[in-house]
Each structure stands twice: as structure tokens, then as C-alpha cells.
Length: 230
Image 1 (cartoon, helix red, strand yellow):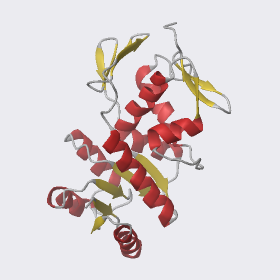
Image 2 (image 1 turned 135 degrees about the vertical axis):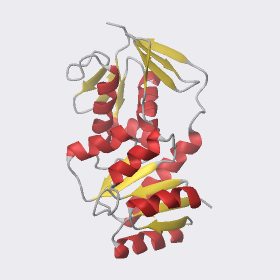
Image 3 (image 1 turned 90 degrees about the vertical axis):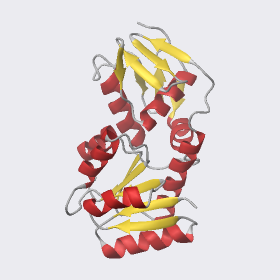
Image 4 (image 1 turned 30 degrees about the horizontal axis):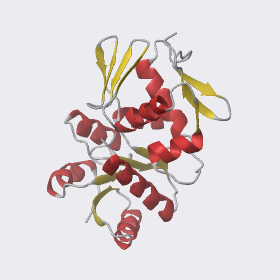
């Protein structure tokens, strides 16, 4: 049974989330603060973490940063009342797999959890491929990226997004396709998640992220990866 750790200090909300996830077939456990979450990560060994940011003892950003610094690959869905763009960017840069602003419907939250888990289950199924554009090298077999010969650390979602653009190299990839291929959403949902991840991806592989050469915006449609190296 898939294990989900809920890190949430609001007792009523945490209980509701736990019951909803258990009704959907998950095994769920609650940690009420950052320190308790640290213990639960080892003792419960979750397959996914639903993480609040405003926590006692240790906030969610700090916990996520420590998880990724320690090499933890456990997917993290941030669930928080903090909806500022800078908070979202920080969350994704630290390695969050999704960022959801409260309040959110239970069905949507469970759908997002399931989409993350489907994506994780399907990771590593790409055929062996190596690609290059500009001074960026992408090894899809090893799931590594280098820029100017130096390694670039991409989150799982950033790598999947780049891979999807590579699959359609030179062509426009619309937002619905990106949501389906990268996030596992089968229907369009109102979200700026794509734009946020494109921004973080550009910051890591573009020389001038504000004036990108490679990952180009196609207004009102989606994005494309420039086919040539210029």
C-alpha cells in the first residue's frame, strides 16, 4: 500500500486529509511539525510527502531543503496557504514536485498525488538518448544535464519538462500536452505550474533567462525548444 506522510500542524485539516487519503486507498500518517516529520521520514518511509510550509519547530522549506541535500528522492507535494509567486519558485527550486495553494478540493488533491506517483512509476522508461543544444548536454539514459561541461542539478519535474520539449524539438508543445506528459493531468486545470517550472529551468540552462535562446514562449499556446544551436 502506498504510504503518504502528511506534514501539517492544523489538527482538523490533517485529520481530514488523512481520512480522505485512506478512503482513496493510501496508508497515511500525520506529523504535526518539522521535527516530527524528520522522525517519520525514517520510521514511516513514505512514498510521498504532503508538506505544509508554516510549521512549528522547522518550516517546510527548511525540511524540504534538508531532504534534497541528503539525497532523498521522495516526491513532495507542497500544500500551503502561501500563494506568492516567489514562494512557489522557491519551493520548486528546492525540489518540490507540485505546489498547491489552500484551500483545495480533496478530489483535486488526491488527483495530484496520483499524478505524481504515476509519473514516478513511469520514470526511466525513455529509450537511451543523448541530446545537445548550445552548450547544454542532456543524457536521458543517466538523467543528467551539463552546461558548459559543468553538471546542472534539475529537479525531477524540470528534467521531465526538458525531456518533453526535446521529444518535440523545434515544434510547439501546447500547455495541455505538457500537463499530460509531465504532470499526468488528463484534463486542463487552472495552474501556473508550467510557467513556474519553465522559469526555473531557464534560470539553470539559459545564459540570459530573461531573454532565452533555447526555451521559447509561444504566446497563448505553449513553449518550444529551439531546434538549432543559435
